[in-house]
Image (tube, rainbow over all chains, first blue to last red; front, top):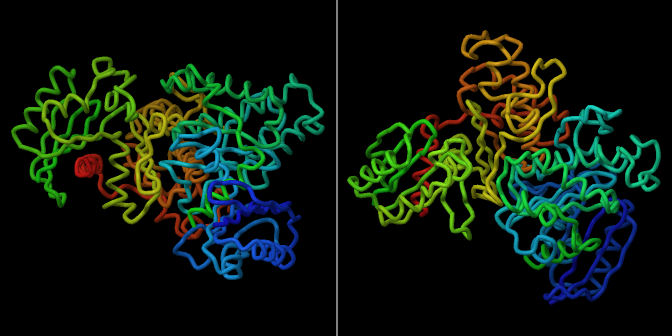
Length: 289
Length: 289
């Protein structure tokens, strides 16, 4: 059996062909243009490879309400060409095979839980901090959808008293996580690209403060067994340790679990499957389709 | 079959006897003294009633890690007599019947989801705002435990710029939900007991701001199909509507779901099973034991 996996991103599409054991048999990439240009190319690729099932991890927001006629559509994305585009339905009808969809970050957390940094966990959160901030939430052995799906990047936070930009950069929310801690927020606060900063630049103190608040709020709300933080901003290797220290400081001993009080370095971790956690997640979604 | 239900609170114990259909056959209450005084009385009651199974919804924090020898114990509670007390194990061994335990708020959310304000929902959160703030989280049809269990009351929030007490009253955390929005916080801010305030007292503007931030963060993190808010502070009937308006304002159109944008009054709701949601939840837990 051949399983197709699609990691649908706002910039590029990553397409893979896996066998049932998760061996990658073939892979290709294409830029994300408008659906009428991109989708036929993706269908051609998967058709030629004669896949039996398809899994999709996609940028969102997505309609994941199975009782809705729009199930599997991309909804209110700022990429206007893709707004209300029925991605799952179009791929499924063209290929005539079982197919399933979830958010890109839910795909990633599923892969990290089943075969990566959170192997063996029934409860974990995967956060990616880059141009935006997004998270996949996996609880009781399944990804969380609920009414829509998690949008952790827009959780509201307490600004740091020394933040020169306490409102953040999100056009929707004052002092939300993405507005305060995304790559663009960090760059704007520093006045230059994040990559040009030294490890001890004070903007990383603020960055760690916000990511630690996020960790605290995730711990208080869903009590994950592990929190995985990846994405471009975490390429700065010294940052993770600052986040760990700040999380412990903010929790202030309230959660009495040795995973946090003693072994925080194996509780707040980097992803293991980067950069293919999303594609592997799409394979897992396809396998279950 | 007779199912015993125990709602174990820090002030009182509520014990009920149900049949399989959920009819309450008998009920009693007793004050919560030390375990060596209270537990034998509870065992006597359930033994005399010849129950076949027992469900417990208890104050916490609890050890809910099934792989731990301390499973079913109360852990780091400020009620020192009860610290590390093996509540589930003691009751189960004395009665010799199947028994199961969850937090009081998880019991309540389970009852509200199966037979109350969130009937039919697979994903909901039940928050109680009183002396403390706690929440039960029910996702994908089950309550969430994870590493420990949710402690939503200690989520960190952004203080209101006009709050005279922006740090809150929690001894552990600066500006956490419980520290800013519990009954004692509200009373301290007002300088008198909350019950003496008029509906238009400005402290309710702040209270709604904090409860709405909590709702936003719950929506962003777990995307519940419904949020139920109960507890003493919500006895103030005008408050719920302020929270709804403030939640919509803070979300600022970001979550495009008619449940929120059009029908918020049936999305943020009061409990339906108050004051017996906890006891009914304990019955459900016992039934599944």
